[in-house]
Length: 333
Image (tube, rainbow, N blue to C red; front, side, top):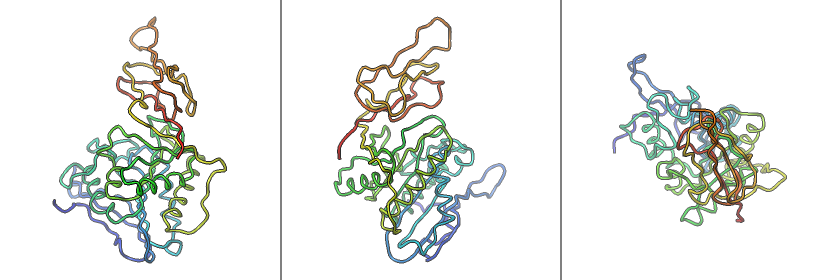
Protein backbone atom coordinates (compact mmCIF):
# COMPACT_ATOMS: atom_id res chain seq x y z
CA UNK A 1 0.00 0.00 0.00
CA UNK A 2 1.26 3.50 -0.82
CA UNK A 3 2.63 5.84 1.81
CA UNK A 4 0.24 8.33 3.38
CA UNK A 5 0.23 11.84 1.93
CA UNK A 6 -0.15 13.16 5.50
CA UNK A 7 3.03 14.32 7.20
CA UNK A 8 3.48 15.20 10.87
CA UNK A 9 5.30 18.34 11.98
CA UNK A 10 5.95 16.65 15.33
CA UNK A 11 8.40 13.89 16.20
CA UNK A 12 6.49 11.18 18.06
CA UNK A 13 9.66 9.88 19.71
CA UNK A 14 11.12 13.20 20.85
CA UNK A 15 11.13 13.87 24.59
CA UNK A 16 9.23 16.90 25.81
CA UNK A 17 6.10 18.68 24.61
CA UNK A 18 5.36 19.56 20.99
CA UNK A 19 2.45 21.42 19.42
CA UNK A 20 2.13 20.90 15.69
CA UNK A 21 0.06 19.62 12.80
CA UNK A 22 -0.83 16.63 10.71
CA UNK A 23 -0.54 18.20 7.26
CA UNK A 24 -2.82 16.81 4.56
CA UNK A 25 -2.28 18.23 1.04
CA UNK A 26 -5.57 19.53 -0.33
CA UNK A 27 -5.65 21.40 -3.63
CA UNK A 28 -8.81 23.44 -4.14
CA UNK A 29 -10.08 26.60 -5.80
CA UNK A 30 -8.83 28.92 -3.08
CA UNK A 31 -5.44 27.27 -2.53
CA UNK A 32 -3.80 25.35 -5.36
CA UNK A 33 -1.07 23.91 -3.12
CA UNK A 34 -2.97 24.05 0.15
CA UNK A 35 -2.92 21.75 3.17
CA UNK A 36 -5.47 20.81 5.79
CA UNK A 37 -3.65 21.48 9.07
CA UNK A 38 -4.95 19.12 11.76
CA UNK A 39 -3.70 20.27 15.20
CA UNK A 40 -1.81 17.70 17.27
CA UNK A 41 0.03 17.74 20.59
CA UNK A 42 2.59 15.12 21.64
CA UNK A 43 3.90 14.92 25.20
CA UNK A 44 6.66 12.40 25.83
CA UNK A 45 8.55 11.61 29.03
CA UNK A 46 10.42 8.37 29.65
CA UNK A 47 9.49 4.77 29.08
CA UNK A 48 5.81 3.97 29.49
CA UNK A 49 2.53 3.39 27.69
CA UNK A 50 1.09 5.63 24.98
CA UNK A 51 -2.42 7.09 25.13
CA UNK A 52 -4.08 8.39 21.97
CA UNK A 53 -6.79 10.91 22.88
CA UNK A 54 -9.21 12.14 20.21
CA UNK A 55 -12.14 14.52 19.92
CA UNK A 56 -13.94 15.93 16.92
CA UNK A 57 -14.48 12.55 15.26
CA UNK A 58 -17.77 14.29 14.50
CA UNK A 59 -17.50 18.04 14.14
CA UNK A 60 -20.58 19.03 16.17
CA UNK A 61 -19.60 17.21 19.38
CA UNK A 62 -17.77 19.67 21.61
CA UNK A 63 -16.83 18.09 24.94
CA UNK A 64 -13.92 16.15 23.46
CA UNK A 65 -12.72 19.03 21.31
CA UNK A 66 -12.76 21.53 24.19
CA UNK A 67 -11.47 19.15 26.85
CA UNK A 68 -8.50 18.07 24.74
CA UNK A 69 -7.61 21.63 23.72
CA UNK A 70 -7.48 22.44 27.43
CA UNK A 71 -5.39 19.35 28.15
CA UNK A 72 -2.89 20.29 25.42
CA UNK A 73 -2.44 23.64 27.18
CA UNK A 74 -1.89 22.39 30.71
CA UNK A 75 -0.36 18.88 30.62
CA UNK A 76 3.43 18.93 30.97
CA UNK A 77 6.08 16.21 30.48
CA UNK A 78 6.95 16.20 34.18
CA UNK A 79 3.40 15.05 34.97
CA UNK A 80 3.53 11.88 32.86
CA UNK A 81 5.46 8.67 32.37
CA UNK A 82 5.14 7.53 28.77
CA UNK A 83 3.50 9.40 25.92
CA UNK A 84 0.24 11.24 25.30
CA UNK A 85 -0.90 12.02 21.75
CA UNK A 86 -3.73 14.56 21.61
CA UNK A 87 -5.80 15.16 18.46
CA UNK A 88 -8.69 17.45 19.51
CA UNK A 89 -10.22 17.75 16.02
CA UNK A 90 -9.91 14.39 14.29
CA UNK A 91 -12.19 15.33 11.37
CA UNK A 92 -10.83 18.86 11.19
CA UNK A 93 -12.90 20.09 8.21
CA UNK A 94 -16.09 18.97 9.98
CA UNK A 95 -15.04 20.68 13.21
CA UNK A 96 -14.44 23.98 11.41
CA UNK A 97 -17.98 23.88 10.02
CA UNK A 98 -19.65 22.46 13.12
CA UNK A 99 -21.07 19.55 11.15
CA UNK A 100 -21.18 15.82 11.77
CA UNK A 101 -19.52 15.04 8.43
CA UNK A 102 -16.82 16.74 6.40
CA UNK A 103 -18.00 19.65 4.24
CA UNK A 104 -15.34 18.66 1.67
CA UNK A 105 -16.42 15.10 0.87
CA UNK A 106 -19.38 14.50 3.25
CA UNK A 107 -17.23 11.83 4.89
CA UNK A 108 -18.24 10.51 8.30
CA UNK A 109 -14.94 9.81 10.05
CA UNK A 110 -16.50 7.14 12.21
CA UNK A 111 -17.66 5.22 9.13
CA UNK A 112 -14.44 5.64 7.10
CA UNK A 113 -12.08 2.97 8.50
CA UNK A 114 -9.72 1.42 7.59
CA UNK A 115 -9.40 4.37 5.21
CA UNK A 116 -7.55 4.77 1.92
CA UNK A 117 -4.28 6.67 1.33
CA UNK A 118 -5.46 7.55 -2.19
CA UNK A 119 -9.11 8.18 -1.25
CA UNK A 120 -11.14 11.18 -0.16
CA UNK A 121 -9.93 13.62 2.49
CA UNK A 122 -11.80 11.74 5.21
CA UNK A 123 -10.51 8.37 4.02
CA UNK A 124 -6.93 9.66 4.01
CA UNK A 125 -7.22 10.90 7.60
CA UNK A 126 -8.68 7.53 8.63
CA UNK A 127 -5.85 5.73 6.87
CA UNK A 128 -3.25 7.79 8.75
CA UNK A 129 -4.81 6.82 12.06
CA UNK A 130 -5.14 3.19 10.94
CA UNK A 131 -1.51 2.75 9.85
CA UNK A 132 0.48 5.31 11.83
CA UNK A 133 -1.24 6.39 15.08
CA UNK A 134 -3.19 3.36 16.28
CA UNK A 135 -0.14 1.04 15.98
CA UNK A 136 1.94 3.21 18.34
CA UNK A 137 -0.70 3.55 21.07
CA UNK A 138 -1.59 1.22 23.92
CA UNK A 139 -4.74 3.02 25.08
CA UNK A 140 -7.21 5.08 23.04
CA UNK A 141 -10.00 7.37 24.24
CA UNK A 142 -12.41 8.82 21.66
CA UNK A 143 -14.79 11.37 23.19
CA UNK A 144 -18.24 11.69 21.64
CA UNK A 145 -21.53 13.36 22.52
CA UNK A 146 -24.82 13.48 20.66
CA UNK A 147 -24.12 16.39 18.34
CA UNK A 148 -27.02 18.29 16.84
CA UNK A 149 -29.28 15.30 16.23
CA UNK A 150 -29.06 13.17 19.39
CA UNK A 151 -29.20 13.50 23.16
CA UNK A 152 -27.86 10.83 25.54
CA UNK A 153 -27.75 9.90 29.15
CA UNK A 154 -24.02 10.41 29.81
CA UNK A 155 -21.97 7.23 29.54
CA UNK A 156 -18.56 5.77 28.78
CA UNK A 157 -18.64 2.67 26.61
CA UNK A 158 -16.82 -0.36 25.35
CA UNK A 159 -17.86 -3.38 23.27
CA UNK A 160 -18.07 -7.13 23.74
CA UNK A 161 -14.83 -8.55 22.35
CA UNK A 162 -13.71 -12.12 21.63
CA UNK A 163 -10.45 -11.57 23.52
CA UNK A 164 -11.51 -11.85 27.17
CA UNK A 165 -8.46 -10.01 28.51
CA UNK A 166 -8.91 -7.12 26.09
CA UNK A 167 -12.66 -7.04 26.75
CA UNK A 168 -12.08 -6.82 30.51
CA UNK A 169 -9.48 -4.04 30.13
CA UNK A 170 -11.75 -1.96 27.87
CA UNK A 171 -14.73 -2.39 30.20
CA UNK A 172 -12.59 -1.44 33.21
CA UNK A 173 -11.37 1.67 31.40
CA UNK A 174 -14.95 2.65 30.57
CA UNK A 175 -16.18 2.12 34.13
CA UNK A 176 -13.27 4.17 35.56
CA UNK A 177 -13.94 7.09 33.21
CA UNK A 178 -16.33 8.26 35.91
CA UNK A 179 -19.58 8.69 33.98
CA UNK A 180 -22.89 7.91 35.70
CA UNK A 181 -23.41 5.05 33.23
CA UNK A 182 -21.12 2.47 31.64
CA UNK A 183 -22.47 0.90 28.46
CA UNK A 184 -21.63 -2.18 26.42
CA UNK A 185 -22.59 -1.00 22.94
CA UNK A 186 -24.03 -2.92 20.02
CA UNK A 187 -23.11 -0.97 16.87
CA UNK A 188 -25.17 -0.73 13.70
CA UNK A 189 -22.10 -0.37 11.43
CA UNK A 190 -19.24 -1.86 13.42
CA UNK A 191 -16.94 -2.80 10.51
CA UNK A 192 -16.10 0.80 9.50
CA UNK A 193 -15.85 2.37 12.97
CA UNK A 194 -12.73 3.92 14.47
CA UNK A 195 -13.65 1.87 17.57
CA UNK A 196 -13.30 -1.39 15.63
CA UNK A 197 -10.07 -0.28 13.98
CA UNK A 198 -8.48 0.30 17.40
CA UNK A 199 -9.87 -2.88 18.94
CA UNK A 200 -8.77 -5.00 15.97
CA UNK A 201 -5.19 -3.94 16.67
CA UNK A 202 -5.48 -5.25 20.22
CA UNK A 203 -5.55 -1.89 21.96
CA UNK A 204 -7.59 -0.81 24.98
CA UNK A 205 -10.37 1.40 23.66
CA UNK A 206 -12.97 3.55 25.42
CA UNK A 207 -15.53 5.86 23.87
CA UNK A 208 -18.21 8.12 25.34
CA UNK A 209 -21.50 9.84 24.74
CA UNK A 210 -21.74 12.90 27.00
CA UNK A 211 -25.20 14.41 26.56
CA UNK A 212 -25.87 16.09 23.19
CA UNK A 213 -27.74 18.77 21.30
CA UNK A 214 -24.71 20.23 19.53
CA UNK A 215 -23.39 22.23 22.47
CA UNK A 216 -21.50 21.81 25.74
CA UNK A 217 -22.41 22.76 29.30
CA UNK A 218 -20.44 23.20 32.52
CA UNK A 219 -21.80 19.81 33.60
CA UNK A 220 -20.74 18.00 30.42
CA UNK A 221 -17.32 19.69 30.39
CA UNK A 222 -16.67 18.74 34.01
CA UNK A 223 -17.49 15.13 33.16
CA UNK A 224 -15.24 15.16 30.08
CA UNK A 225 -12.24 16.70 31.83
CA UNK A 226 -12.58 14.45 34.86
CA UNK A 227 -12.93 11.43 32.58
CA UNK A 228 -9.83 12.31 30.55
CA UNK A 229 -7.80 12.61 33.74
CA UNK A 230 -9.21 9.31 35.04
CA UNK A 231 -8.36 7.61 31.75
CA UNK A 232 -4.73 8.75 31.97
CA UNK A 233 -4.54 7.47 35.56
CA UNK A 234 -6.10 4.16 34.48
CA UNK A 235 -3.55 3.84 31.67
CA UNK A 236 -0.67 4.34 34.10
CA UNK A 237 0.59 7.50 32.39
CA UNK A 238 -0.14 9.92 35.22
CA UNK A 239 -0.33 9.39 38.96
CA UNK A 240 -3.20 10.51 41.11
CA UNK A 241 -6.47 9.58 42.72
CA UNK A 242 -9.34 8.61 40.46
CA UNK A 243 -12.20 11.12 40.71
CA UNK A 244 -15.33 8.98 40.69
CA UNK A 245 -18.91 10.05 41.47
CA UNK A 246 -20.36 9.07 44.84
CA UNK A 247 -22.96 6.88 43.15
CA UNK A 248 -21.38 3.84 41.46
CA UNK A 249 -21.65 3.77 37.69
CA UNK A 250 -24.72 1.95 36.36
CA UNK A 251 -23.93 -0.92 34.00
CA UNK A 252 -26.03 -1.08 30.83
CA UNK A 253 -25.94 -2.98 27.55
CA UNK A 254 -27.37 -2.43 24.09
CA UNK A 255 -27.91 -6.09 23.23
CA UNK A 256 -29.02 -6.08 19.59
CA UNK A 257 -30.74 -4.08 16.84
CA UNK A 258 -34.04 -4.14 18.74
CA UNK A 259 -32.50 -1.51 21.01
CA UNK A 260 -32.72 0.99 18.14
CA UNK A 261 -36.16 2.42 17.31
CA UNK A 262 -36.36 3.85 13.79
CA UNK A 263 -39.11 5.92 12.29
CA UNK A 264 -41.19 4.57 9.41
CA UNK A 265 -42.93 7.92 8.99
CA UNK A 266 -41.97 11.55 8.45
CA UNK A 267 -43.28 14.51 10.41
CA UNK A 268 -43.08 15.91 13.93
CA UNK A 269 -41.76 13.73 16.75
CA UNK A 270 -43.40 13.77 20.17
CA UNK A 271 -41.42 11.79 22.72
CA UNK A 272 -43.65 10.23 25.38
CA UNK A 273 -40.81 9.21 27.71
CA UNK A 274 -37.75 11.04 29.00
CA UNK A 275 -34.06 10.23 28.91
CA UNK A 276 -33.15 7.82 31.68
CA UNK A 277 -36.71 6.55 32.16
CA UNK A 278 -37.30 2.87 32.77
CA UNK A 279 -39.30 1.47 29.84
CA UNK A 280 -41.41 -1.68 29.66
CA UNK A 281 -42.01 -3.76 26.54
CA UNK A 282 -45.19 -2.55 24.87
CA UNK A 283 -44.97 0.93 26.41
CA UNK A 284 -45.70 3.92 24.20
CA UNK A 285 -42.40 5.63 23.41
CA UNK A 286 -43.24 8.24 20.76
CA UNK A 287 -45.86 9.64 18.41
CA UNK A 288 -45.17 11.04 14.95
CA UNK A 289 -47.59 13.56 13.46
CA UNK A 290 -47.90 14.10 9.72
CA UNK A 291 -47.13 17.59 8.42
CA UNK A 292 -49.00 17.00 5.18
CA UNK A 293 -52.49 17.72 6.52
CA UNK A 294 -54.49 18.27 9.69
CA UNK A 295 -56.94 15.74 11.06
CA UNK A 296 -54.64 12.72 10.80
CA UNK A 297 -54.03 10.72 13.98
CA UNK A 298 -50.35 10.26 14.89
CA UNK A 299 -48.41 7.08 14.28
CA UNK A 300 -47.52 5.45 17.58
CA UNK A 301 -44.31 3.60 18.41
CA UNK A 302 -43.95 1.09 21.24
CA UNK A 303 -40.94 -0.43 22.97
CA UNK A 304 -39.98 -3.94 21.85
CA UNK A 305 -38.27 -4.77 25.15
CA UNK A 306 -37.75 -3.63 28.72
CA UNK A 307 -34.90 -1.17 29.21
CA UNK A 308 -33.72 2.35 29.93
CA UNK A 309 -34.09 5.19 27.43
CA UNK A 310 -30.39 5.83 26.79
CA UNK A 311 -30.71 8.11 23.76
CA UNK A 312 -33.31 10.09 21.86
CA UNK A 313 -33.45 12.17 18.72
CA UNK A 314 -32.84 15.83 19.56
CA UNK A 315 -34.71 17.68 16.77
CA UNK A 316 -38.46 17.10 16.61
CA UNK A 317 -38.53 17.17 12.80
CA UNK A 318 -38.08 13.55 11.73
CA UNK A 319 -37.70 11.65 8.46
CA UNK A 320 -38.28 8.02 7.55
CA UNK A 321 -35.31 5.97 8.78
CA UNK A 322 -34.24 8.31 11.59
CA UNK A 323 -33.43 6.64 14.89
CA UNK A 324 -35.51 8.42 17.53
CA UNK A 325 -34.84 6.26 20.60
CA UNK A 326 -32.25 3.79 21.88
CA UNK A 327 -32.93 1.42 24.76
CA UNK A 328 -30.29 -0.18 26.97
CA UNK A 329 -30.71 -3.04 29.42
CA UNK A 330 -29.31 -2.97 32.98
CA UNK A 331 -26.72 -5.72 33.54
CA UNK A 332 -24.30 -6.92 36.19
CA UNK A 333 -20.61 -7.34 35.39
